[in-house]
Length: 173
Image (cartoon, rainbow, N blue to C red; front, side, top):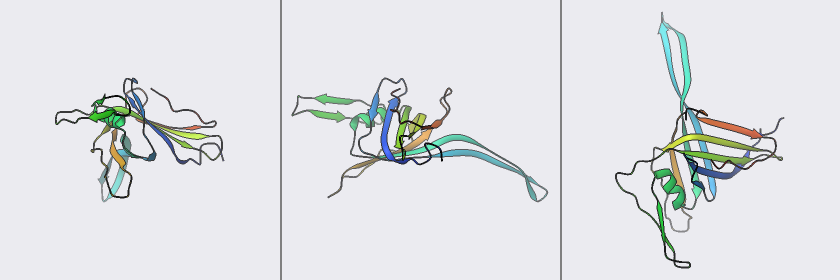
């Protein structure tokens, strides 16, 4: 067995603006899933399939984190968070409008290995395609869920999965 083959759990999810200027760690990361979306076609004739073509087109992803980070919500939706007051009476506010346009951003996730190793998943150009959602419920913590699509960024591709023999920090840009 080589390193990085037994990732366990989800240690960290980091969201990064496309210009690398804003970095937000999701609180209490719970799930990070992804699935390549393929374009495919078949050529048939003479009562049989003669050729099949398939290639990756995009990446469908979803995230889930305990709690709600207004800073993460703002980064993914292109909005801003306003903080007023002084401690212990501060207030943070995020306002949404009907004409908001969601930006692209990067997603980095980290899972630890069963030794000194870890695995990083890097999604280079992601965008929300479903609304952020969660539920306030009696006796339960709020859990934020979101999903979207990632496309090729023109430089790095759509995504990378990196197995590190010795655990590393996630990038910040």
